[in-house]
Every structure is written in structure tokens, then in C-alpha cells.
Image 1 (tube, helix red, strand yellow):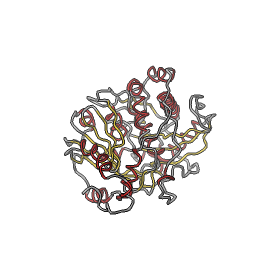
Image 2 (cartoon, helix red, strand yellow):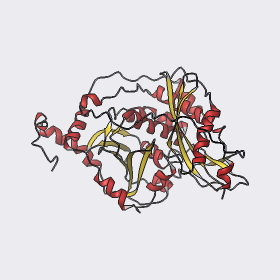
Image 3 (cartoon, one colour):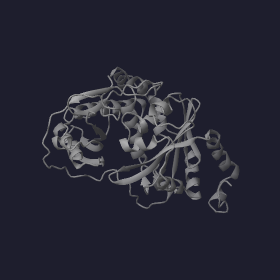
Image 4 (tube, one colour):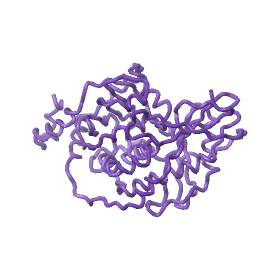
Length: 409
């Protein structure tokens, strides 16, 4: 049965054959993959979605899954009342920039633009977004409606690294996806209970209506700059190298495009013993996930970011610059060292065009307040940041800062 209430008067305005045709592409790419792991993603203490990683070979090793040439699927089911397209696409763009080498980002720039253009409206509670690898293509499916596909043998792993690469959404999120099928029944029950209504499925089908738009133009300058840029050293969850003093774990983001190993090279930055005075910066509830309650599909449309290959690469290059800038100011708190505290923190930062900090908030705090406070203080020490390049529009620039604190073993 395709949709339960086909008697709904809304459905009568659409030819049944057209609805069936829209459903067929997704059925063609679904496979008998198994759930490798489930993980909940939160931001600003609000649960956004439950993510699932499917694979035809269960494994607890991210490198093995990335190197596997079989069918794989990422699926997120929305828990929040509303998840904006801008927020979701920012997760993809930043995650791909941090977890993939510059040469691969340059080569796949136009595909990244096409990928982020597929979701133009907010997702709602119960929506099911699938990103499916099948052969050399990546299919994007929302509520059983295929929105589009990317024809590239490397693209799926580029996206997958945002979840299980060296710098995932969080260490806990990555670890929960890499359980080789050992899934907690409670989160599995919640995951399986999330499902869109038939009316919502029909609304998504209407997204397929083509709309004319300008063809993105690209110039070579930022592309060349990103291709020539060295790989940055963002925090990583790879095993730390034993050194005689505590370090802030950092890894080389230069993964091979083939992802045969997908292991990030570790580099260590010695950190100074720092006291842990209390300080705070007022948190801003930016990127909230609470909905306005508007159900009309026409009012779901968000003001799209006018991304081209050039502008996307410019943003990614600038984001890498901001990460490198901030990492120079991070110290491992002496109190955390004495208490053997480790953890990952993700901070949201908003700066004006001159690089001055406007807002700071903890997107994903660790279990240790000492580490969370140090992450926020590091942003204060790094202020002002390098100014926003002219190629990037807007009065301000928002970015996330992932940090992993790890002690040598």
C-alpha cells in the first residue's frame, strides 16, 4: 500500500501514476543493509535527530566501513519539531571541509553545491532523510521520495566522514554509529517510531516540481586557493600518540579520496598548564530548533543561500583558517589534567565582518564543565579573528569549533 489514506481530498488533485513514479526511484536503491549503529545528535541541549548507519558488512571500525565498496546508507530521522535546511546544510558543509582533503573538496565542489541545494525547506519531526550509496552514485531520499542523485564514486564517503571521520559531530555520536550492530533497544524503538504522515509525504513530492533558476557561475581563484592549501590539523578522535605531557589531540584532515584507510595522522601540540578560573560568555540560543507551528508548505520555504562552487570553497577555506587560528589559543586546563578528564566539545561562534566575536554558545558540551569553559575561553583569547573575506557575503559569519581534549596513555 503506497499511502494509507488515498481518499484524502488532497491526493485527488494529483494523478496517481505521477505519485507512483515519484516513489519508484527510492525503491530502486534500497537494499538489505543492516543497522551498524544508531546515535542521537543534539545542539544547544536540544535533540535534533537520530542518525543511523547501514552497511551490508557490520563493523566497529570506521576505516573499514569507508573502504567497503558495498552498499551503505546514512539515515537521519528528525526528532526536533523543526530542523532548518540552512542548519542541516551547514553541518554537511563544515563536516566535509574538516574531514576531507583540499584536493577532493575542489574536485567535488559542484557536487557539494548540488547536494546542499536538494533540501530547500525545513525538515519536520518524523521526516526521514536517507543518503544512499549505490554503485558510483549517491541518492538523496526524503520520506521515500528521491530528491536527486550525485554521480561520483567518492561523494558518499565525503558525506559519511562528517559522521564517522576524524572530526565527527561528536565523539559519542561517532562511537554510537560504530557498534557493529549492537544497538540499544530504547533508541531503536524511538528511531523506528519516527515516521512522516501521508500529507507530509505528499508535500515532499511537490518539491520535485522544477523551478527555473540561474546557473551557478564559478571562477578559479578560491578553487585554486583551496587546492593549494595545506591540510589543517583539527581535533580528532583517533588514538593518541603517547607523549611525555598532556596534549590537545589534533589530526591531519588529509584523508585519501579512496578512503582505503581513512585514518587521520596524529599531530600533537604541547599545551601549557593553566589554572581554571571561572569565566563565562553569555550563551546565545542561535539556530534554535523550535518551530513556529506553521504548517503551510508555502511558508516552509527558507531564504536559500546563494551557493556556487566558488562561494562554497571560499567558505570552507575561511572556516579552515578560523580553526587553525583558534587552536593556537587552546590550553589543557590543569584541573582537568589532575582529574584525568577527557572529552569533546563543539562551540558555535558568530563573528562580524571585522572578525570580532558577537556570540558564543556550546553546541555540544562534554561531560566536564572544566573542558567546556576552556573551549569558550579559547574563543575569547582568539578574538578578534581574521576578517571575513570579500568573497563571502553577509554582515556576519557563523562557524562551529570542534575540540577534543585527550590525555596520553
